[in-house]
Length: 150
Length: 195
Image (cartoon, rainbow over all chains, first blue to last red; front, top):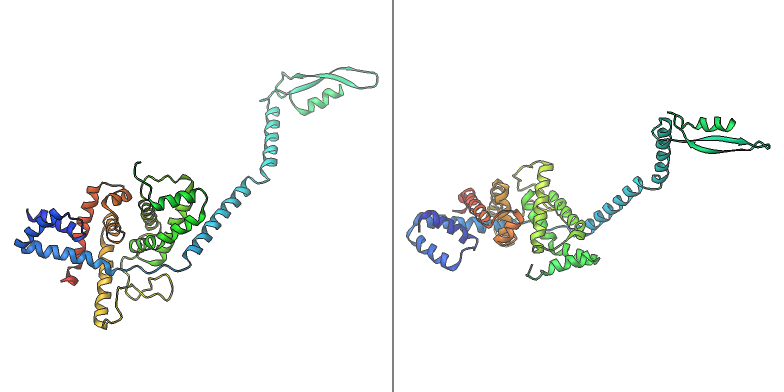
């Protein structure tokens, strides 16, 4: 075994990851190689020294604080859902739909029905039919009013 | 997947079915480990506690999508590692070196960098241990992130090479290489104190 291989195996051995066969092979090399033996010792000590770096204990209120955060997050999500959709959504959508409809009629994008009086009886009642307006802008509400007057 | 689900994965599935007590139990089982990992990764207790909370909040919110494909601990440390990496990016890298006198515990009265000391040690030995603890921290912090992660998962969490490879999304061969280089780096940094 060469020294490069020995040092790799020594690194594995330092963390206990070397199998028994590899360990035996490594030990045989280390017996005859001072430099590798010193390296292996240093690797092992450095790995063991990591024990000295101790993490502190978590505070006792960690779980309570965590659950509070989770519940607060859930409440915030619900509030957000209500504030956006809420009870403003339906009337807002209805108004928007009406506005779009009127714009379409005014601009002729959508054909409108014009009231065409056919007859007026003696009592002054007007009966008529609604027909599709062929004229641009003929869908105005004014036309309905004018038609009724005719 | 042929292997039986580990008990913690089963607890997570019970939580998925609505048993919130199972979640609390999992938190109690993993909180110190996740916190310790984050503490050694990020270097201070305040950030580590925030990171640990974020990890468990992510676990809580992921319950509906949870499907055990790996050991539960592997999944937890994958989330922990990603959370710590994101935190490092968001907050910028803080100073890698913390003085022994700086409060690094979660409470104001916590001592500085903790050492594994014994009551019967004489002050010079205690000083030597504190010096070594600080040197170990500095040596770890000087490693590239992927080497440091591999060391934290191998040395402190005792994860197998396969599990570490899964957490770090790399091959087992890459994990071994990272650990070899990390160990050589640590030995080099600590050689002055360990001779």
